[in-house]
Length: 391
Image (cartoon, rainbow, N blue to C red; front, side, top):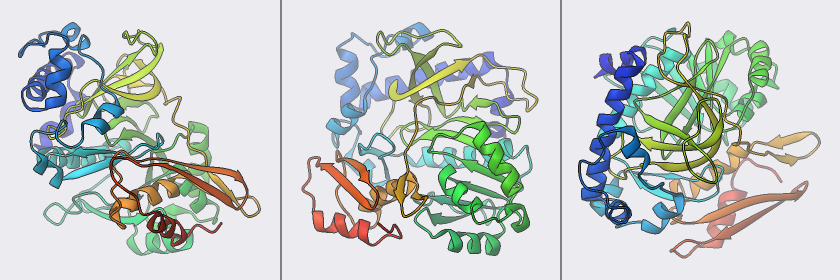
């Protein structure tokens, strides 16, 4: 499927829209017939199988919330609870955990779209023999395909000097990480180009083009942004010409008025509503992502991408924690702590709500509201104390 996936963004927008509507029609019918949450939700508005014939039909469907996914776990959001054998969890900036089952096919397609991402965002300067280094919360499911498309992983709790040492060793052509982590690498005065790095993809935190341009000069690499979420996968990617193109075969995106939830016009701000076009295990259809965005028509971009464009996200800022004198720990590190509650410490986090708050330097307060499962606070305390974060 590589060829069709690689070439998808270069198709005419009319053919892209046609494919999307057919895919969405299939996903909605599948969810209605197999997922109890959607059966109840769509019965309430009189939905019948095969009703999605136009975009107006689709826009009549009710919007999905994170709370519905949390409350529907486990039986209401999957066809079979065994589907949770392959799963992911979203914590993100909202501080609310939701558990999602993931279909194996979705992982495969998502992986191939990831290879396309490297081509697009590097300006086609990526070879299957190159190494990509993820400095992230957890490794991706697949690290090789027939020995090619190799990826390596470091958690964002890795000390900066150790990360730089690893970059020198691996000489990756592309690095994917958080803006605040990249800024800490830059503070060491290194030039990533000296270690074979040509492109850095930043994500999960808001960063401005001016901020990225500053780091580009300091690190001597191209830095581009990725906008994505666990629920919706890749949403938009900044191309090498600094335009955000929607990933139209990964996620279908709308922008709606925050009060009326009616679709807004191109160029007007609205809340992002998205449908994951890959995953059938826990379908995500017309999901309220909660971010404020501005969508635009496709443009005549030099990169050749025919998909719609998006202005930089306006509402996904994550604060850092201050420590010592003029030093800080990026918010991504606290996301790592939260992810490790279930990755490393086997804490049942589904439905858990959390908030890290800093009232003064060297003091960090953690607020927790447990979900349906009991919590061992000693293990949670241990998970924080045992990190490289010094408070």
